[in-house]
Length: 580
Image 1: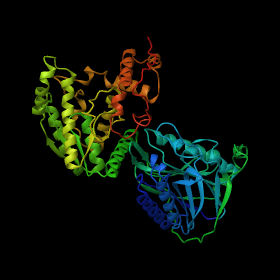
Image 2 (image 1 turned 90 degrees about the vertical axis):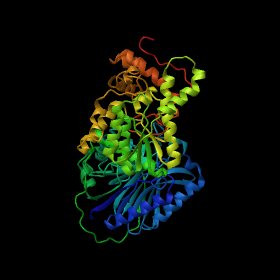
Image 3 (image 1 turned 180 degrees about the horizontal axis):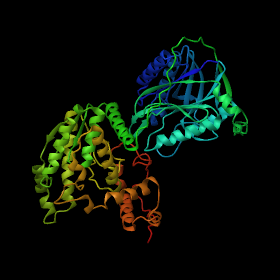
Image 4 (image 1 turned 45 degrees about the vertical axis):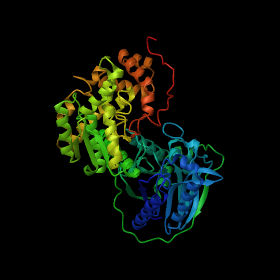
């Protein structure tokens, strides 16, 4: 048998844009056919976009997806296509549609429905109860959907050992978090090696609300070796030529394959695919193995993709950002300019009596380095007007956090006015460290439509900023911004460390509490400073009401404040704290 040519088409769909998503699939089919591929594979739920959430409760939405799926199937003359679509047949399923030579040849429903972290699939879908393999001219392949391949004895194992599949295809919409791509590759390599089969994994790419999908589609050989890898955070088509005899040779040399115990009594159903005429095609160059991004660049690219897709898919012509001359607003502006183009970014500095000349100079220098539009709107007189209006009520009470918070609330009001007048989306600039402990002003610096660095701890903000300057070969973010103590500049000589522990002490506690789920007593027992642990965890617990009112932002850690984090606002639980 000649080699099997496979095309993995990692696409960036938009939730609800069924026609546009179908157009992307058809374009991918055309490109795969031109490249001489027999198999074209697309991501999970590519027709609906993922996650479609309660759109799935609208029968007309599901029906439209299924009709488009049938239209795509009619365009598969001469090849086989596998793509994701919600499918209603008795009950709603998260399905892989297997289309062959002009018709739907089979529907494979997802068996394991994730209902943890950001996932809610048990809310919508019925679980599949069987698996199938497909036989194309003697080449047997199995199809599974996302979560199903994460289980060692799941459908791919059944397809390989019970059904004789030589290729295990998995279509996926796997959301990104820092380091997930490398862990996913290790898992897929293990599945290939354990089952003695090729594994082809086609993942979605793009941003959807707070989720980012990283692409990073891969093909592994039956020995677990990496054969091909698609780019991270970009649409791509990965072409790979498979030797059909390699899995058989591998299995003959691996006694583990003869000791597999099926979980179910029945073997996967065999679905024969009608023979199709072969085509003359050019020889294929070795499959591309896109290089992996390093840790910090990976996060940066995720933020750029998530921000750009949120703004564009929501239909905004550009964004507005309050530029304070600090590190957070500087990084937010750089990400926005990279995501949308500098011509679509408006920076506004809004100084008061407490704003330093250095900060204003740094904001202007950043804007000039990026090439974005920049304006200064002084708010001192507005601030005085607010104080004057409130003075009969405030009386002789001393200056405190009230007057501090008035300043960001004035800024938020002006930015939202610009949003209304110019149609620009306001980007907020708070980082995860601040969001976590409530070091933010409701209706002030939290006012906006998208929180670009909401899931980025402060220490990582600095690492990302230094990486971006190094990548540019110049100081886009002024060096002074990177070295001066962080400050909100809302009172004389203010520093963040007046109100919070130093960030290099705060961030590890926040990560342990939020991302790892450790209790305060466990953190203290591990050697963390008891005073810092107590202070930070109490701040996290009491500020849920603020986080619930903040805009969405791209998830880049294992647990972000959003779908990952669902605590009641009214909540009197107090976790044990060492000395309690």
